[in-house]
Image (cartoon, rainbow, N blue to C red; front, side, top):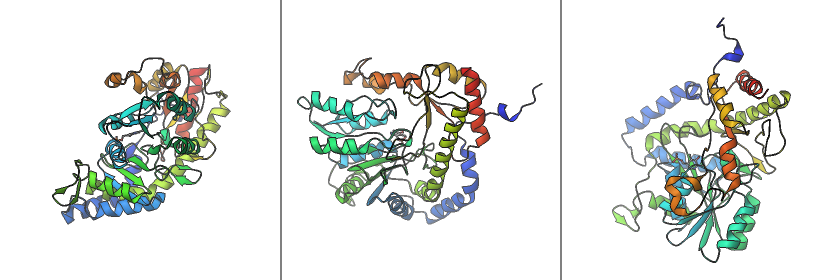
Length: 390
Ligand SMILES: *Cc1c(COP(=O)(O)O)cnc(C)c1O
């Protein structure tokens, strides 16, 4: 009676063990070598990883640091954005996109998202510029390449040129993503990456990186991550300790060699999800589904690396409970728009201020996607969703 057929097997949201197993020997050898060297702070693996990472995305410079959150903070500080300045970003992201602006001493201004990509809307940013340019010293726009898809960069470039603004990238979810052939991390004045264990390029703990095409930004980021020192024990500015750990760099150097193939596989899996959903007759075309699901799409110009595969449905919470019951992993990124977060109440926003972001927070659901996910597991996921919706 309890005989499980393939369709009843659990499907994990993410399975680290599958990506670790084939790399285990290589990773252990690299860790052993780093330990044997007994050089733990800014050792050779850090410099090697920075060089290889920059080369892979064709950035001129890369500066490793302790986390993606610190990378955001370093990018802002390196671009000399601080007290008295305002930065426009999205309310639909991980908390750090906004908290880093506050940590840098600047003021976050939020603008609503585009309902199709969930990325910051260029039109909404123009709206904020039209109403707040007089009252706020708006210095920068920091879009997030959410779920692994670059935001509409041509529009943001035009806006930045028109208003003389600095563009920064929260590229935490977008290692390997591109916009018109140029990699995330090379589009803005500076970009922040996270190598948190769930990210497409991931460490065995916390790690992050600032990338830039601009030598002076790289030089400042490197100085600020190491107590504002250019010369040992001579401090030019108040920096902080946010160095990339040598052991993490040694591991990341190995992972870096596999991330492009992993991203390519994620793209195949995304295409396969789209086929399966279409075959099951569950699709709705618009961004506002009523009975079916709206699938994520790759917009023209983007090379999406599918950090997440996020569908949209009005019955999101019930669907999630149903999937959990069937032991199918799913997650909500993110269940509450940032302008409604308790910690950000002082920004003065209210419910209703960003309707698209609020609606997305109620409707998005991330399904399993990782390079080692199997196609039969995708079939299990889609047939469970079909069962729920029928
Ligand atoms: C993961 C993430 C961060 C923070 O990175 P950490 O390495 O966890 O500090 C920032 N922004 C976005 C969009 C993220 O997804």
